[in-house]
Length: 161
Image (cartoon, rainbow, N blue to C red; front, top):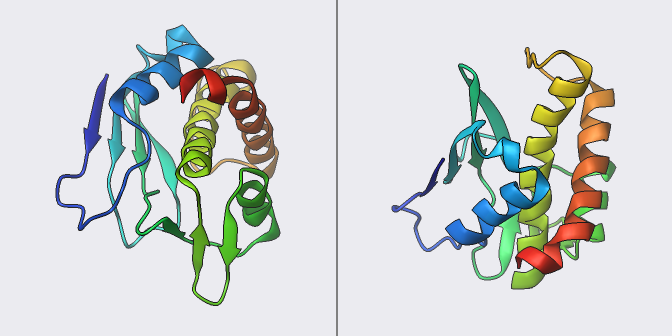
């Protein structure tokens, strides 16, 4: 498994280290380590997702678009579902600025939540669809992944960070 950080990041701070990322994946489910081809922390201004899972044959890439700049991240969405998880994990939405203010520790927890959410899609597919991930996920799958990721973050964050 490769973990890559965008080197041309314009001063953006990625909040998880290589060690923390590997530790988080292993703490959730050791068998997932072999399923992940690459975790890439980088910025894509064209996306409205903070993280996404990409299928690469039988393996997966996880791409992150979550970073801090002066202790703030972009607020990519204003839905109540999105803001609920930000607030639950310690972020302070600043809607007029389209930013979220974070302490470093809370930003790390939120980044773990995003990682666990993407990993939950793999687990969901294995449990519910015979391992197939096809197209956009359903509202049921998204809720399952959110719930799974939040529980995992609460249970494992202190051990990882």
